[in-house]
Image 1 (cartoon, one colour):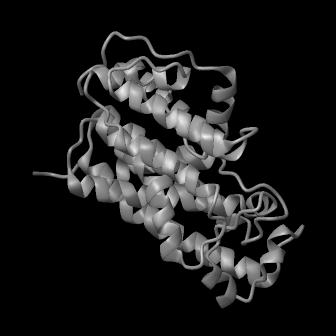
Image 2 (spheres, rainbow, N blue to C red; image 1 turned 120 degrees about the vertical axis):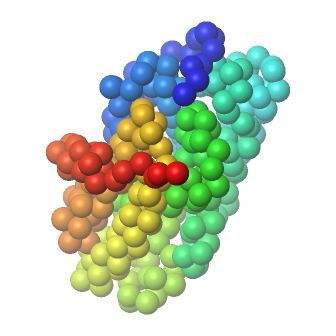
Image 3 (cartoon, rainbow, N blue to C red; image 1 turned 90 degrees about the vertical axis):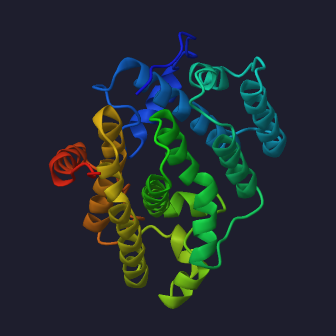
Length: 288
């Protein structure tokens, strides 16, 4: 893998470090080479900033997201962005290892969040994940210089699975914030009223629904695991970390019995490391 340019990354703030540690998966494993770690942290900083603008910003979030979009365009257009997170991408951009389109899809996902708060059918939620999650995997593949349509498809499965397990962890919090990511058709099928998402404990019907949704996310994560066989070296290890975090979160959701409301559902470090180790020996590089 080619190294990045000598341009310095923007500083990694304590706030962003705390948010990285709270993620289900390791954003940039400590054992990775310094430059790859710096690139992954820079990408995370931008993705996290976009999400924070869409979820937490005071004032006109749409306007702020559009300003951030313009900052991204400046960076990819040989301009000088002011935002420190966007400046952090400059080493990889100037080395020709990133493209603008997937970053703009992340902005579009958060613009959609300002208007769309419910998803009637699962296909609608998958379309949202194509904006909110899949671009991150495409960006990582770009950093690893992997130009392979099959790899991108497998990456999309992993990223969608990661997005879904995050939604299933945060059902109650999302409901209190006015958003419901559980598809309306699934709520109806399992006999779960939307108001139940704000309860202190999950009903038997909701537990059954969450077990079903967890299985669907697990199938996506498992269906993308062949991606590891198409990668090598540090890139394979980095992506293994993302997948291991998702699988450990699935285990935590299973352990909850589907009651995602009574207590926070978070993957254990032991579970993550166990999956990471298994993925190293349980998957092999694709031959040919």
